[in-house]
Picture (tube, rainbow, N blue to C red):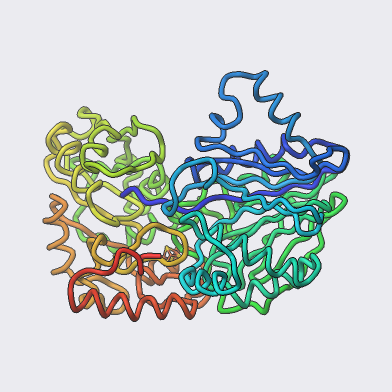
Length: 509
Ligand code: SF4
């Protein structure tokens, strides 16, 4: 799949009598796939003179917490230990990668209720408007990141409400438009984790004998058990106190809009999002793709391979559903880091380095290669031409994609930021009843060097998720953005794209 990234993972723990920093470290490791650019934690410890402390650095969780140096690891967790805390893994496209930009953000204050730290996962779509508003209240912005804007809004409301966090989040819900899961701890030891009223990103919780835990995904809670896992609902906040959780509806839920892309690509295959298994969803994607296959596949001439890692269960179940489980094979191996950070530069060269084909699987075969999605197309074009045909010796390559054509940007935290970077954006008028026309699919197949191309349909992806269309965000597929700012940005950007073929660098959020 093309290199796209999501913004971050959050976690929180309240473990009376224990050092929560150990649990936070493990949860951050389990959320590493949601962000590899930075990691950090904030803990509260009333026995410490500095009650609230934050440790954060750029890098992977392992690098940030001492790498192979076990003594350094123990020292960090001891020095920053406390029974209450939050953790964060970061991927960011706004702001540079200095320690300052890594979360949690901490605001130190002499009054304990005004002293807090927080981390968030998502993206605030109306950031520009919020910047103007917070500046008009006299706040100064130093960093190019929405986290700083959010911090000042929290400061403002906390000051106004004397630290009533339920009321603070109620007010925040009137300010913020977009996707936001926020974990916050203050110097009084109050710990709150909230999910935005649309529920765009997943957030989940569990209480065990060891304490109370919240994380972006269930994969980070499984070490504490699977029974009793409870998703946090849209517009709900969890107060973690004395090893228990109280849930409060701080804002009226809006149109439920869980991002479908979480299931297909971002979330861990071991996670369950709002009660739906990611693994089962990916398997159903394979079955849906098999239903719309047009080639006469057999077990002599054909082989089915995934683009690793995400597409594995999709390709495996596709081969079973097509009637030839034996033709599923591994023809492409990922040799680089899993989800490497893409800086500027030649994407195709990076893709060439990232994979290696297995010629003994591919040579002389008609290859069905299955990927989770095609965003910009550089990755797939390089895989087909270079890995599968040139090195692998495939006779034909037929691309099948588990995500319908991505035609529009995301304003909620996935870095697909403009129409023009998306290969399918100019074909949006050729989608009818959720299916891209054969003519358009043939044209895109040519652009990625493939002999044929079939995209998943809108109905297929809805069937695979097993959720109602109205409960899912699919705005990058159909431009039905769930929030008012998303709709406004779409109107402005789409109009401009139609007129000029480009959009402003950010309107790009
Ligand atoms: S626009 Fe697409 S990627 Fe963004 S939240 Fe909605 S479904 Fe997810």
